[in-house]
Length: 323
Image (cartoon, rainbow, N blue to C red; front, side, top):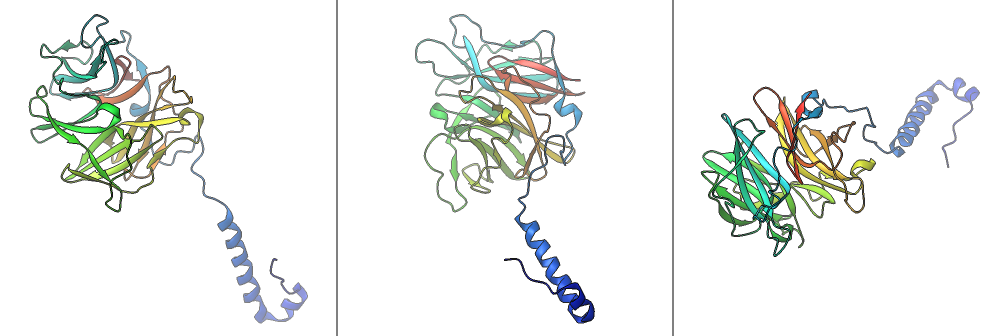
């Protein structure tokens, strides 16, 4: 029942009642406003900036720039997210190869390029064949390269190298809930990692249903910053059924995440999308997502020294140049 206020003729005659009336009215308005749920900015209402050079790309005329051999080799096909680092005048590509027959184990390959467009496979390929490696993210810290990748059954693990070619297995990632207990059993894959100061930030998905964030200072124990996802599906159609983080970069004081998503329950087609954050926890999706369609996914950006390029990795490597 709403509160009953005195008639105007009554409170006009009793001036001391006016503060009571206004106070009750303000309280009622505050109560009504509190019932209205908060809503994220709608389409076209991004509150944080999305730099044009990070979201607007055109396809390279000679795509694809890298793909499986198509022959009876260990890398007859390639799949999932590969990763590219540009160091000096050389681009370094790590990728996953497999055969369509037999055990179909996913092995690690390596290729180099002077321009990021024409690639030469390493003669040492596959450079790691002691276990399943796919969907990798590579970070260089000091003189060491850290590769966070999916293993068999989509379990994330870590490998290290000092020369980009010879890799040592460091074991599965040990991820804990905020209370210190291990996360529930099951897959945790598509690891995307960024290092800020002495802290490592790991984004991971579980069955492509959402993305969580865990941190570590020793690369041995990873602890969720919160047990709820930091990036979820929806509410728009383009990422309604699946999301997975590919890469996070820092640019002009903000963090930008490149993630692939699916608008279909059977995941038969994927798209590339972008989100922005101030703190790596709270993410705002680009109002004009997706930035790429046509089943171009598992994408990362690489700065070629003048502009950004967007490389999509699955099921072949295509490059898109900033407009």
